[in-house]
Amino acid sequence: MERLQKVIAHAGFASRRKAEELIVEGRVKVNGKVVKELGVKVSPSDRVVVDGIPVEREEPVYFMFYKPRGVISSVKDDKGRKVVTDFFENIEQRIYPVGRLDFDTSGLLLLTNDGEFANLLMHPKNEIEKVYVAKVKGIPSRENMKLLERGIKLEDGKTAPAKTKLLSMDKKKQTAIVELTIHEGKNRQVRRMFEAIGHEVMKLKRERYGFLTLKGLTPGEIRELSPHEVKQLRTLANKSS
Ligand code: URA
Image 1 (cartoon, rainbow, N blue to C red):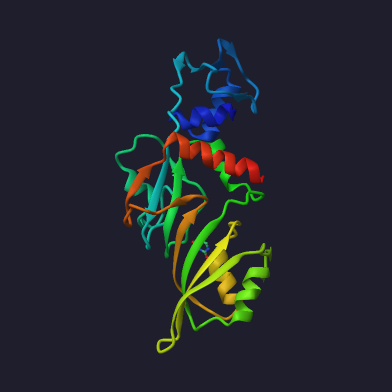
Image 2 (image 1 turned 120 degrees about the vertical axis):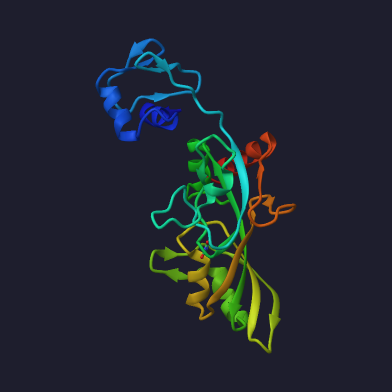
């Protein structure tokens, strides 16, 4: 179920605010009846009409994207920088990213036009695992890795228990590659966790989201999720929230 004004806006009829005006002005019908109150929710089977014109509901679509570095996780940027939806020019649906990866972070990002699905996956109670691989300055000690695992106090709260794996180290260059598995999505969480233990992140990539991996994709490539994968993601999110 989605709010009526959102459905109208999504179909490209008007902005969310303008859609609210259309409703209040009595220009919107749901299943043949004028609806003037805001906050009414409609399901995909409800027939929505604005000024006598049926609102075509978009087919829900679900994509996985290998975000390259140097791209904003947004649908537009005031400064004209590249955004993730620039890679989806052939897709007519109005999709947006599920959560975000920093400008300098590469890796797996989901995009959809299904608001309910996006909210479900982004719900903070969700324990969907996200696996990151970070190249860090210096070589973290075993104790510091334990701190990451137990949880780090950040200014917006303590991080939940995490898993770590030291994948490799370069003693000469004093750098290390560390895998960090978390299930939260605080802003710049991985970078801040490493900073808190004294290791600056030089490079960051999200390699896995739940059971989804980047296998078969190169940076900038997209692939549609199968109906089965979408169903599995819903099940995973529901199970953990
Ligand atoms: N953590 C970060 O620090 N950056 C990201 O892009 C994702 C997680």
